[in-house]
Amino acid sequence: MAEMDTSSSGGGKKHQGTKSKKLSTRVDMTPMVDLGFLLITFFMLTTTMSKPKTMDLVMPKDTEKEEEQNKVKESTALTILLGKKNQVYYYEGLAQDPNASQDPNFFNATSFANTGGIRDIIIKKRDEVAQLRNFKGEPEDVVVIIKADDGATYQNFVDLLDEMAINRIQRYATVDISDQDKQWIKSTEASNGIQ
Amino acid sequence: MPKVKMPRKSTNIDMTAMCDVAFLLLTFFMLATKFKPDEPVAVVTPSSINTQLLPDSDVILLTVAKDGRVFFSMDGQAKRKQLIEDLDTQYKLGLTQAEKTNFMVGSSVGADLKSLKTVLGMSADERKSSGIEKGIPIDSANNELGVWIEYARNVQGQLGSLNKLKYCVQADNETPYPVIKDILDTFKDKKIQKLNLVTNLEAKPAGSAAALYEAQQQATEKKAQ
Image 1: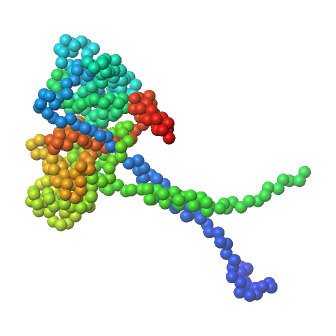
Image 2: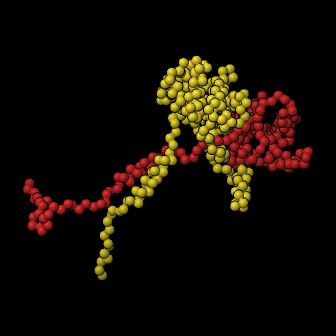
Image 3: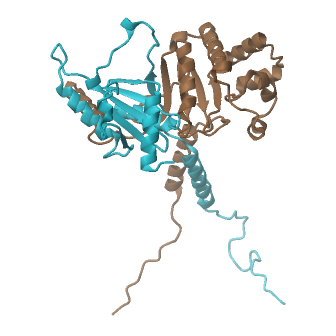
């Protein structure tokens, strides 16, 4: 088909000299912006802004000598046990009094829930113990004994240490679990239906 | 009535400003990003309210996987070099220079000393897929973790300051407690009482003693200013 050549230079126009085409200084920036945002998205998603934090854990020295050991009073102690399935068990005191442990309400189960969990128990005990006075007439400090069963996880352990920090409990210790404690956990698990 | 004439506007907008912002952000994120070295295991750490930062230098890092495998790592290439050479001489591992370099530049290792040569002969991907790294033995019969700690302390004493050395344990949420206990007991045996547990940051629960204490601290600081 016949087409007209419209691009013929000159024609009948007046300007005949070699004239460079006037190009716009504007460039299309869309692809560049696209790429820029793509990369931003990538780096934003891969960046981990927060550095990991650490928690101090100071372990007591093992000592055989009587005079170097700290004695804990039955009345100021709270024993917390960590079981499997994120279960927490607790009892007041050190379970050295056989009569006290006969009480059906002696050994209790709870959880890591923010309210109604172990935190409330710790706060209650802390405030109770703060009412007591030692022989110098100063308020007593609660001593939390932490015992972890074999079924407990690291998370439970750290969560409990974190509870100590949250409630500003100064005195706490991790202690090996006793057979008696294991027994209690087992029977409580059985009655609560935890496999 | 005459028709209201809408002024004709171009659909082109000036993207220079947007472009500037985009690239500024890009530069920021590029510089802020620090790519993690390829770790042999992925670990999800528990969270705590502690705000103390994990130190960058003079640190021994023990990574504990979900299944209880323990990996060892130490900062500083010079120290790692010295460490692997000491272990090589003492335990007659017969490592080649390439294997030593692999340890020097690589990430953490989690194998018993006997299979260390095989592990270091592999690339990072091979190590991950072969499952050869069964963790450093921590049971009391064959506590190689104690050996690692001992040698690392020795190296730190030669090339740095022993007092500055921090012992960090980075364990997964689901690590069983007995493994952690074994590790803590190992440290206790070495007369190391102060450890750092690696955690993520979480907010202090409102109304808790820690939150109140912090508020009080801030109030006194403000007063002092």
